[in-house]
Length: 220
Ligand code: SF4
Image 1 (tube, helix red, strand yellow):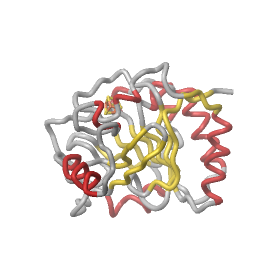
Image 2 (image 1 turned 180 degrees about the vertical axis):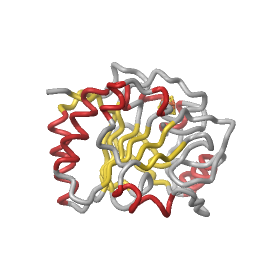
Image 3 (image 1 turned 90 degrees about the vertical axis):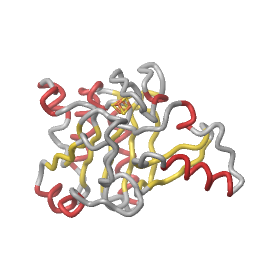
């Protein structure tokens, strides 16, 4: 059995894919995009190892609480292809109508066979490095070069209306836990400054927020 090194999980996620989702952020990424706002997920020795079966159990629990989709982000999921495949295969086997969305900093053309196998069960991929010089207003994408690749009928049913959608405001969730304040979503350029103003106005300390560890940017 494989274990996936994970940075964090969260339910409900409503800002990174349609519906109400389980979010899993993997730990470890060597792609080093300039401006990445998830540099705390870069270290492959960080986070915790979670057996794929335990993550499938987490998915099952989330479905019981109303989840209708899974989002895997990071970190770089495809730098752990064996464990990712096992996890996604387990979710796929009992997912019902729930879709699987995977973020990767790789382009499809860069994937080796093992990485292609790892995302066999993904309905949708968002591919490509975060490029801080190419801002976008497209929902759920961090920069204009990133592509939303829909691979299944379920993916087409759930994502077709979102492919070219540019919402007035990027959906963002702000969460606080023992590790500090952190974000779910793809903030637009300049969006973090406005968020910090709002947090300050609410009396919340922003100095320890996860994005303060790095330049404003985007998770892959
Ligand atoms: S944006 Fe994504 S792919 Fe790029 S360095 Fe950050 S975690 Fe890695």
